[in-house]
Length: 107
Image (cartoon, rainbow, N blue to C red; front, side):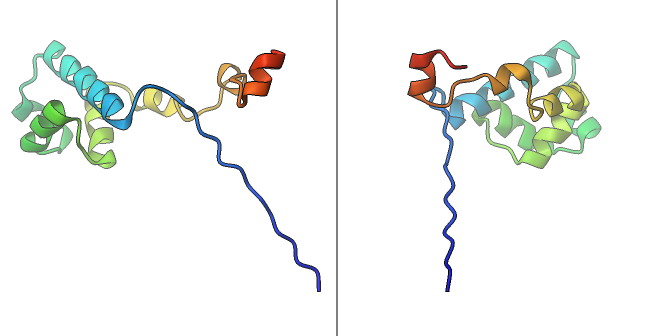
């Protein structure tokens, strides 16, 4: 009886940012776009189908569901720009994945 064990590696990118930093940055970005568009939270709620209370909580804490984030983003910006983050680019592919690659300059 042959038993094959497959292994996989978990690739992690280490950064000084955490999820709270990023979610608050997105909240600040969308709040600024809302203000530039001269929209109140109530007006944005009407356009985006995201409740005004949720928008307020998001702007203050960075907490929101992913679906609601997409609805706000679609209303204030372009979903295409957000989608582009999911596409691998040559620049992202060139990021070193190990200290050995950095030391050997293989990226």
